[in-house]
Image 1 (cartoon, helix red, strand yellow):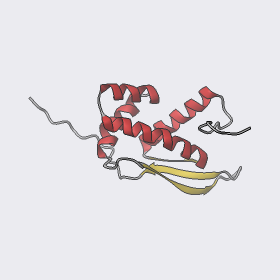
Image 2: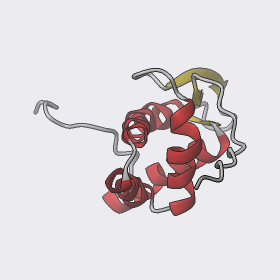
Image 3: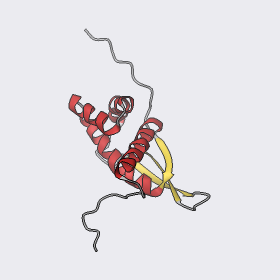
Image 4: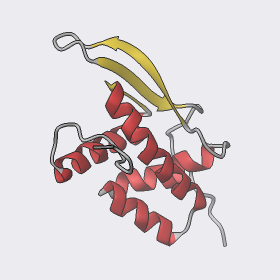
Length: 130
């Protein structure tokens, strides 16, 4: 059998467990700006997170609601849309993965995924307008 047309990694989990794992990793990455996980997981969440950043950069209410539905977390969606996305000046390639050695125990290759640009997480105070 061939593997044509099969996207993504299964991680030995059912669909709902895999989706929850990816959402949790994406929320942690948005909240902490850098996380260390297995290299396969880092490569898998990079695809989805970069798509979310592109959606956040477009702005608008519909895109905000789309982020909330994909992340299942209003706080992370607001952080991504209001604080992180405006600071990113590039069109793509928002994240980098660096190899971080091997995990003690099962010798799995680890990777650190982080934003390429330096992000200041302190929210800017909105100007009081008329």
